[in-house]
Image 1 (cartoon, rainbow, N blue to C red):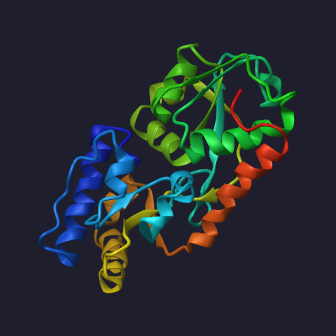
Image 2: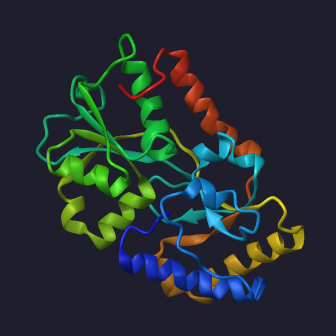
Length: 255
């Protein structure tokens, strides 16, 4: 979920190549493609990463939690993360409230960091279910950041880990925006396996993931990866609470 650049994608694949043979020598790495919902529901899924929002929207019935990464990035505390609210560097907005009537960008309808926590932040400010003049879906956090930088949108909520990676690998893009606030925190993007993966394999995966971090500290630093934490499904209920709080204020959709 954090393949922000080809170099980072290669780093994540290297991590997988260290982890998988120690757990299941027959496991293979496959390209996810665009249909993540189908991939996540495969009965032979050994390891993937999802977002907490689809997890709580029914995916939890098909998968089990392995672990949640702990990242070294502004906006992260333990296994929790937030989204940074950004506008263009030269835009006249200093707070989210000042963005009333502006244009918003978000990545996907099923994103916690790009949509759900953004909606939660806007909800107290909305009037009759509206706050923005226009809302556009970009398909990715990188796309949302570019939309703001290119003046196709005025504000977006960017996953703080993605934003840190963009700053590392595309500093010229990151410098075209500035921070105007932060969203509420929630549990980070969990690693998952199919429901029928045996418990002993899940435990082996947890151990192998942390071993891979410890064995390659330079790679872990490039991935901003501090380790992995075991969370319960109940921890992710916070994501649903954020959604319900926005709905209770009469703001069910970014608008």
